[in-house]
Length: 225
Image (cartoon, rainbow, N blue to C red):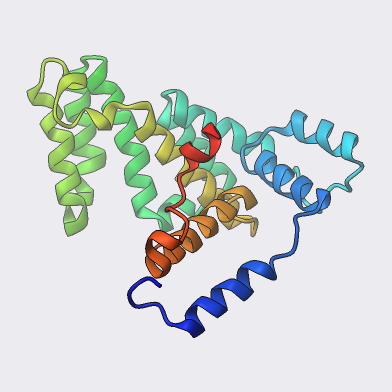
C-alpha cells in the first residue's frame, strides 16, 4: 500500500472507479459538437448534426461567424482588427477585461517589431501600452516587450516565445473564451473540461496510490497509444 493511503481511501477510490457509467454514443456526440461549436467549425457542425440526427441547440450558431472572424484576425496577425470587431460584438468586454486588452495590443506591437517598424512600434508602445504601466502587474510585461528592441533578430532572443504562434494562439483562445462567456455560453468545450478532469483525477490517484496507481495523465501519450 502506498504511504499515506489508508484502507478507507483505497475503498473509496475503488468504488468511485467501479461506479463510473460507460460513455454513450449520445455523450460522445455532445462532446464532439461542443468542440466544433467552441472552435467555430460551423459547416462541419451542421454536417455533424445532420449525420447524427441531433437537434440543434438553442442559440447554437448565434454570432459564430463574427466570432470566427475575430479569432482569425487575432491569430493571423491583425490584432487591431480583432479589437475593432470585438468592441462591435461585445462593447464592454475589453474595457472590463484589461488583461485581455493588453495582450491583444501586445500582439500588434510584436508584429511591428517583427516587421522592423521600430519607430511605429515605439510610438504604439508609448501611446497604447505604456498607460497600462500605471498598474504594477503590467510593468514586467512591458519590460519584456521593450526588450525586443535590443535584438537584431528577436526570434533568436531569450524572449522569442513572445513571437511564437503559440503565444498568439493563447491570446486568441483567451479572447474566444471571453466572448463565449459574455454570450452565456461555456468558455471551455466539453472536451477541454473532460481532459482537465481526467488530468486532476489521474494526478490524485498517482499521488495517493504511488506505484500501484496509474501514471499522471499525458494527452500526448494518450494520442500516441
